Length: 110
Image 1: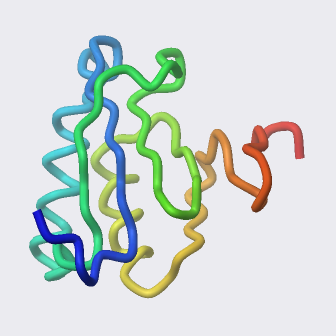
Image 2: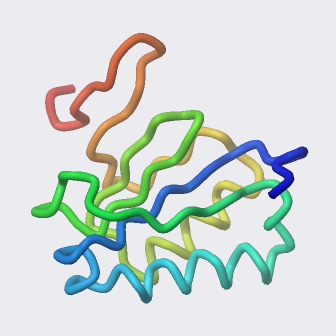
């Protein structure tokens, strides 16, 4: 796989609990929107197994920004991809963690 030109990587949890909560639909929506907006060469996706945040799932993690999005659904998935088209730091109001350049921070503690 050639990642030349890829600027963002979305890790989409498809662990058991996230899958029960709609992770496959989230994955299909994200990948469909990337295709519709012709962003597959800029944003790469990877389905993962459990990311350890089951009670907040489905989870999507954006790199290199280090933002963890919780409770993803098809609506939030479409919004995320549309916002990523022109922006690196996307806020959906469902951020669980973000990276401040040194460590991960819990969004609720802010």
